[in-house]
View 1 (cartoon, rainbow, N blue to C red):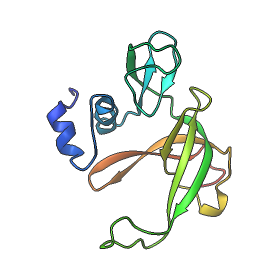
View 2: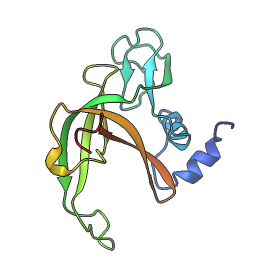
View 3: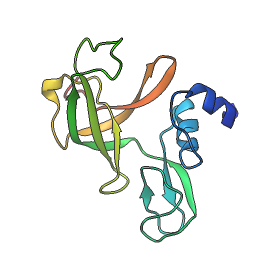
View 4: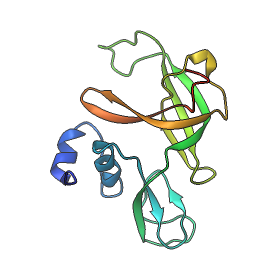
Length: 148
C-alpha cells in the first residue's frame, strides 16, 4: 500500500490545520502509525512538529515512528463541548502522555479502556488506536490488564 498523497491527507483531515511541518504526522495517522519529528543530527524528538531542532538548531528532522510506550503525565476532564449543537453525553478526557523516547516528550491524546477512577499519574500506558468519524486516532491504554 502506498503512502497517501498530500491531496488525500488534506481531504481526509479537511477540518485540521495541516502544514509542511505536520503533514507527515497526519499521513502516518492515516496508516495507523504515530510519527514524531526527530533530529537527524542529535537525535532529539521534536513535538509539537517544527522544522528546526531546538537542541542543536539543525534543519535535518525526519518524521519517525515512536514505540508507543509511555506514562500518563497528566489528565483532565472536559465538561463542555466545543460545538453547542452536540452537547457531551459524559465528560471527555484529555491526557498528556510522556512518551518513552525522551523525557519531556509529551503527546496530547486520550486514555481508553480504563475507568476514570483508575487513572493515575505515572501509570504505564501503550499506544492503541480508536476510530472516530471514519478516522484513526492514537489513544493510549494501561499496559497489561491491571486497569481494564
